[in-house]
Picture 1: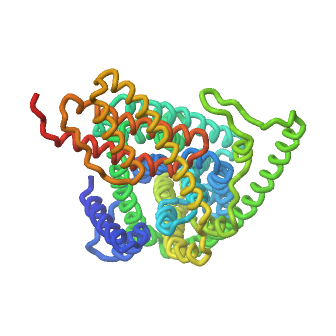
Picture 2: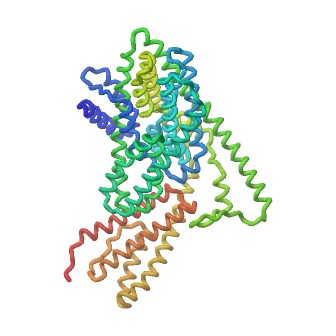
Picture 3: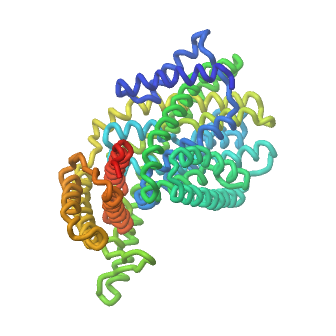
Length: 570
């Protein structure tokens, strides 16, 4: 590795650390500092091949993001995510391509559409960080996060099609493009599910958090590379694997979950810091590579494309949201007619291995989450570009058949759009969120209601488990040991009810293992209840993860006390 890359990473991490300490958006500060530092003669300016950058940075970032996304919320928001992640990318590609071809014919139409595909996909890293800090409603965060997981696949598929057109000079084939996209999705999903199933089985059978974490770090690269080799989408493969592993994570060992979270937070912090520093460092160099006659036409094109990118998004978001609500009303009216034409009994749908869906749950499945005009304003302005735009622009510059002037123009426009959206939208997005007051008190109230309800059900399930254990304890240990059992059980219930950290006395050696098994069984029963409530649609994944994290801490405390307790004499 070039030593200059190491120094860039160290500097980027230092700046990002200052940003986190001060509570500022780290990606924006890193980009600004790198942009200023690029003009200093002693600052290193490394050069990385675009394909290498894409293959090394994108898989872990996508996998980490997919692990944190609620699969249930993701599927419910799929209509909105699909419109933004596929429809908006296609529209942006076409509009930018036509405008760029009109302003700079030397690009040729395939080259201009290639540029459109490069600048089309937003990167939600900055938007998600700002949204979490300012408390954006979950419905908005889900749409932004979900869009960022699939728009890269759309963009990279279009990139391949137009890059091949530039290389071969063949005419654009619409149906071949559709088939290539479908093939990329199908192969990507299959490869991702295979890797996800492998990862889940490994995590279920192994309690070694180090091995699980190490394989987890390598698996995204494997899924991405194999899917790409087979003609599929490496992005879709990594996302599918991450969603599958994340959805089933509560079923695995708590030690794996506790090690995994800080591991991926550190990996994300390192990679994101480097990528945004690299963006800032490269812009002055790519502008300097332009010849004297190219500078002003390309700078003018960059400004126009940046404006088009900013304008196209809201012009698409609002009509698309209105169309989604209209389509929801049509589906609900059809469902009401079908229901009223039936027997009049409550409508349910039986699901294998699960409880039936009630009429209200069926209605929720048919209803698209409604976004207010304020929500859509935030979504419209959260279009910052990032690593995919940067990496694909650098890769496009290496296409041998492309004219040198066109290649330089594509790289400069992509960098200007990336830096421009990061600074313009990234710096003003917090102000927009505050001014519009995009918050949802009902969401917090609903979370509190679910939390109170599931805690009560959790206590009842735990008490039922303890009653069964008491009978078994009496048979195995004798009636004279029930006093010790009852004292221990009361402490467990008090810890759950009052959220106190109570020192549990496990000194009697003849019953030490039984006490520990009972405490872990108590936790296992409550975890199973949370999973059942999530699967039944009565509990959001976000609330479930909060409760499971607290239970993981309880189990860690039990294991810590057991490991540090002096051995009693026989």
